[in-house]
Length: 74
Image (cartoon, rainbow, N blue to C red; front, top):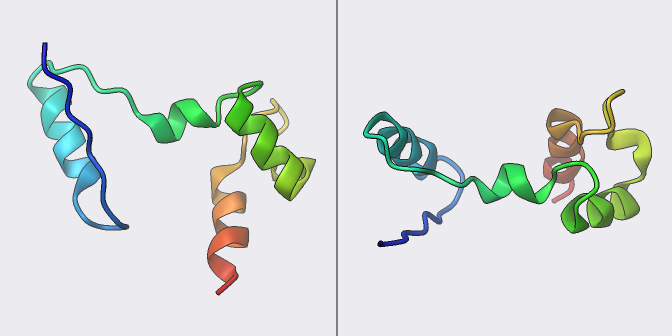
């Protein structure tokens, strides 16, 4: 089995390639999504850094709200 990692900056095509993999039945693990699942270590660190104000009612990270905070800071 081969394992490939997709990395790159914003708008570099990671999602497009990931979607092509999925369309061809190739399993994709999205570390972005998994890292912030409720209760994980990444989730705990992000909540500790940005407070519970970035959480949705169900306890998941509000990615849009977090993005506004992060990308507003030069």
